[in-house]
Length: 418
Ligand code: AMP
Ligand code: GLY
Image (cartoon, rainbow, N blue to C red; front, side, top):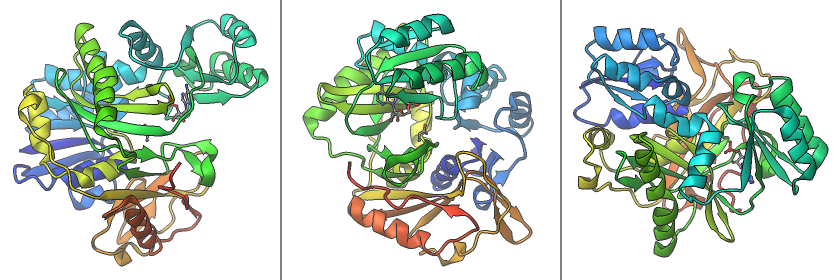
């Protein structure tokens, strides 16, 4: 099969690496890809949000299947556009991707279908939001409704902080359109867990759990980022805990979307908080997480293309997905300054010194002649496997020790228990 993968970060490198192991993939293209993906796929210089060009490319190159990995093209309706052109596409349609692209939609769905989540109110008027902030119990969580690269969330411990967040998003247009509507919710506490799941709109099969570290610096200090590292498994869940997740969150979400006439087909990301009253949903994403994909996919035994096709054909109930025993850890090497301003274009040293059993997924890199240069905020995700999370962490840091570039920044506490 001729496959086009859309995206160009560490998540897409991990997906390309896994797809490439399928005997049925004859040719893999990636748009736009990066210097690492280029060793596995033919990279095409088309942006992931250039829907016209992507549909044209897929038609003219007789692509059999398009795998849409990032949130933006899903929210823009790339899957719908490809289907309309008669091309098979993996990922939710626009009316289902809204589960990620509108937090207000997600919260209202959870309320209607009694899926556990933090109490909340939605506002599209700054005056009403400010008045609510004055009377509500602290701390408060202020969230931009739309996509904001994981940065549209403020946990406010006092009223002035909450008011500033509301003004910033609604009056100063900090996140553009994404912040014109707000969700203000109560603050939950407990360990966070990422649960990714494959679903064909009816059957939902969870992957191994994982745990992301979103803050830029050690001990969860600094700004929120896309994710600075991850481990899998992210928690040790016993069978009753799994049953509770399946019965109160996983199946109800898929059933709710189907009942709303928005069947969700693809990868569904549950950002969970394990509170004292049980697991609650912090957020949904309509895709693989990044860096979570970089620890979950290396543990997947089953052919990813088999799963993708079972989802497209709505026969996921007939598939048993197998996982490797053991654990994985991914440490992200970022450009100093990320997620605020940073410089790029620095040569990356030591890539050939990394032990052969470790995986270096490229996120923001580009090749110039024989040199790989930094080309983004998150530059590399260094992944290692091990029999336990602790050993995977040790191996990932050992591998990262071989790599260097100017201003390289990484967290030293990925995988530390919470
Ligand atoms: P989100 O983009 O909604 O995942 O939020 C980003 C991060 O903010 C989450 O990973 C949590 O650490 C934190 N967060 C979001 N909502 C809440 C909440 N209701 N209570 C506590 N922390 C939250
Ligand atoms: N790592 C969080 C995300 O992919 O949204």
